[in-house]
Image 1: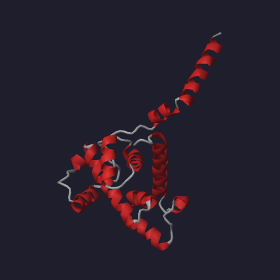
Image 2 (image 1 turned 120 degrees about the horizontal axis):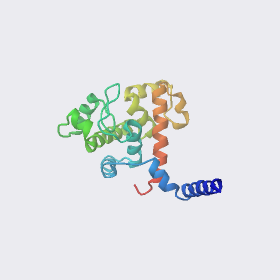
Image 3 (image 1 turned 180 degrees about the vertical axis):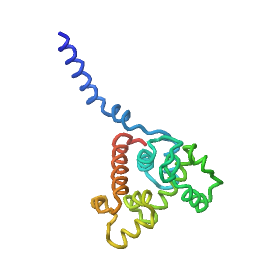
Image 4 (image 1 turned 90 degrees about the horizontal axis):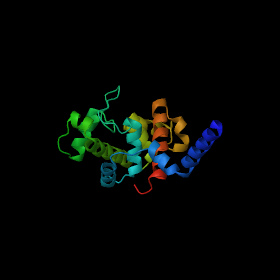
Length: 184
């Protein structure tokens, strides 16, 4: 009798998971700071799904993070890159602590930077994502020397394993967010 009850409960749970897969997907792939992401993405001509995917890959939506290499904030910008963005974009003074702790500041600067990378690489989203991780000079070198053609289909040709996996993760989350949050 106990085995049957357990089996019915397990089958019921499985049925709920399949019937409510959107709910389960949103639980497994949440997006925080939606208003800030929407605003910054709109300001800089980006898809909010892409900004959310970069944040998920970089910090999993947790403020206060710092990488081993010194990148900080939700979008994990290097402090020197953030200073460059502030200067080039004409933003008000941004401290490293603001970048680290304030989601809106990190999203704004990271989105501006990602948009500038897309412009630099002729709206090639994949090359821009790679440049966000490896730096635009390295990606330009790979493209100019033929080491990589900037396409998702050939992402395995990216010389840096970290960047190769980074691009794959961002695109995975990007596609997942587009599927789950069509109204984003």
